[in-house]
Length: 592
Image 1 (cartoon, rainbow, N blue to C red):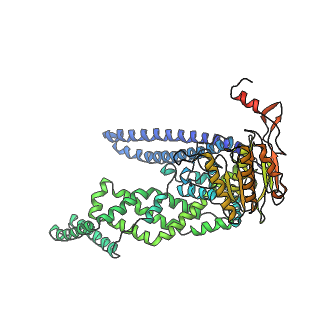
Image 2 (tube, rainbow, N blue to C red; image 1 turned 90 degrees about the vertical axis):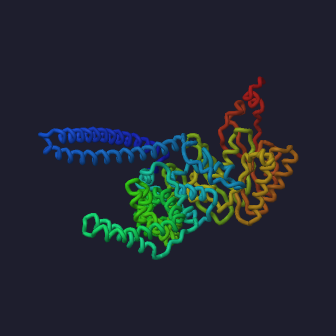
Image 3 (cartoon, rainbow, N blue to C red; image 1 turned 30 degrees about the vertical axis):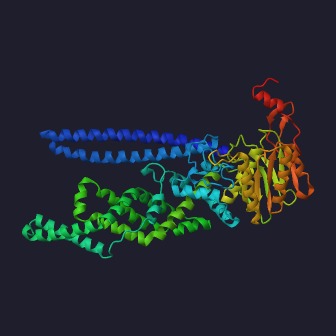
């Protein structure tokens, strides 16, 4: 039996309930362990102070050790269960339609002048990106945005489909990724790593690390020998002073380079540690999909190398602690760590970029897989070599399953465009967005909100609610004209184009609108374009009736003419003949 969105919601809600019980149990165990630990410590102090019981005081130490370990175990369990519970709560919110404004919006990836980003709500609050994104890192989020804003060719989209299908079944892996990096609290940002790779490199002489290791070891040996009186201080001090002077001069000459390297190390220590864990998780996987298998292969050597960098950066942080700081200066530990990190950067710069790229691709694919798991009724599209858009039961992915009304849309050589007539609020704009948004999903490699879809590798162009700009001195009408001009430019390149235009040229009179709209449609039909325009101006429906343009009139209307605002949002053949002028006046508070 094929699961449904409702069954996934029930699964998530049950998981939230179970994790809540486990979280309560872990919290109880944590409290009991804390009480046991405090009691053991009090007993240890009391026994140590009692002259007759001092021999018994060591008996409390095993209890303290056991209680400490038990407390740490329950604390880790509580953190794990809390993070998993939040993950499934967010999933439940997505399935119930309560997700807008709760996740990552992706607005930082917005592109001025993009042909469909704003029109189709790809980024921003309540956007397609927010619905899809479960990536934990900035690199994964950036790659998911690239999937949505830069449509792939069919070969790559099909490759991604295979990866998404396989990842959809890996529930355990999604849980591991949901708790990934939790020890650092929150979403990880690895952008600093790429910025570090791009900063100018600090030069350290090749022989310097070996020399400093030898002189530091000599200092430690001389000081220890003098302390235990194997060597008189009178013999040790000249050597200690000489080596200390060498260290001082070397540190003074290299101080700027060392400080810059150590500053990066302090800032990136946490990210590098998390990256090492993430790449180790990826390297452990065994996938059948060629795309996923390639990502695993690229990451095979990464964990050991990144762990080494993480170890050095960890000691950069530890070096700042009071108990180690002055000793580290005396032993030139900072300079040695800075030189080691620079050597690592020289050796692994290209590899680190490839590892970050592999991780970004993996996280973006996993986001699509999570969406596919939560929407098992959605279909994976097929790609066609001919210019067509054929979708059965097409709906908008941002709408909940209960509120989503579906329609069939078929565009090909016979019907190259639709003119959708109907009054405001009838559902015309939502249908246009459904066409464009599902095409974007298809070309990203994701399943689509349809029972079946077949389409060409389109360039999607949309003009839906183009905003005006007071700062740029641009009216809504001019913004729409520019968007249509961009659509015509896309058609001129020769590739297939899917256009969706809402209320075309609504800012002009009916006669001019009719003439201009026909001119645009004729220009679009000269290329490899299919699409739809919407209008409430019945004069424009005459365009679809022109036999040489291969258009078709369809409309959306109310269920009953006596209730003109009772829309069913279903696409019907022909031209809309209903009028809802009086109903709109009443809606505005006018007594009619």
